[in-house]
Image 1 (cartoon, rainbow, N blue to C red):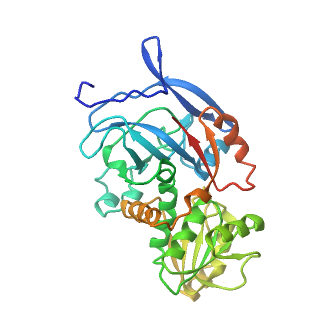
Image 2: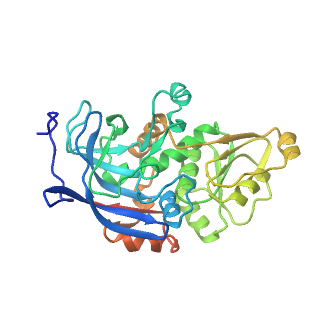
Image 3: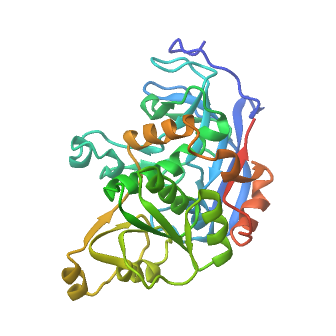
Length: 345
């Protein structure tokens, strides 16, 4: 038993070294460099729960961190925010040994955004794996309120909830409804999530990516329309999930009069557009950041109902040790890659 009376289950990834508990961690030391290091394990503390990551999805954010392209990051960093974890402690509402999905957005609960129910854009937000060390490790400590009950979901499914919730949140931000003609630009995992939940919301969905082969494969997977060339028609609702400044600017041209444009991407650069066109169309522009508990619940419900093809989404697998070589390789080798998953334990 821990000093606080919490039951702790030992992890096979904790090693004894000079009488100090050590855990393996995959560390992005600097752009372009990953190391597998032994680090001190976190200790049990009030207000936090120790958990063992079991699955870690590799996100576009992680690739950007490795490449040095993320706008809000300091090195070194243990990446990983798409998590399925096993609780190592009993805590109110938390049962040791149970698998949970994780909301990686740690919010203050007191700022203007949090008071308005928008903890996803908390002014003091700290995201696991971005602003602080994340789940590519043996054990982490998280607030219990950030552990999400996902009874009946596999570890694989739990690790997909976060990135799908970003797409679900974007769809909700865009007020997507039956009758909308929606275009999703960018067919990475975030774009896929937006396309999937726009379709579930009843929209007529098309997807576009300059990688025509990837676009066609994603359209087949999701059973939506693929646009092989830059669209010449307009759509009532457009989502950008490219992470590319020029593509985000070009997307304004795809929005129909009276339409909505949702920017899911985040880039370092200013985004510009033609003000006369923006006003002529009376366009609505939305930013979409992270996700809320409502979006996580929506995704979990969709997975439970069989609306999310988890087995087809996870295309690549690796381990913490092998990810030292696999993650840098997957930055460039995208053929057939939708979601790569690190298996721990």
